Image (cartoon, rainbow, N blue to C red):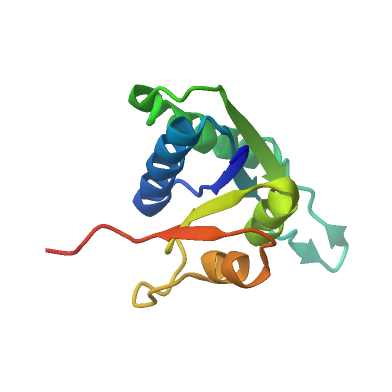
Length: 144
């Protein structure tokens, strides 16, 4: 195994997936690419035209989420450095694009989406169905 791609969104489940993937990479001496995708808000329009919104704060927040997630696995000590990839766009597309040459993709079972009762979120479902390599879906922590 040479390359593991891990998709994160800042949720606790994605942090669990990141820890699992980094440990797997350490065991197999593989590289790790951590992907976090972001999108800005939809542009509001009025009769006189669109109101431009600065994407900077949204990008900065996404970068903070990515940096904090990677800092959260500092104790795992992978064999090779972890590459962080911040992508503007949809999450599943960003993960699948990065995983085109990967040996394994790791995602959490569900992230910050609005349907808490689902066992598999929309991003993890898309990745499972469309990845060209094996996918590990790390479940959320057990509810007590």
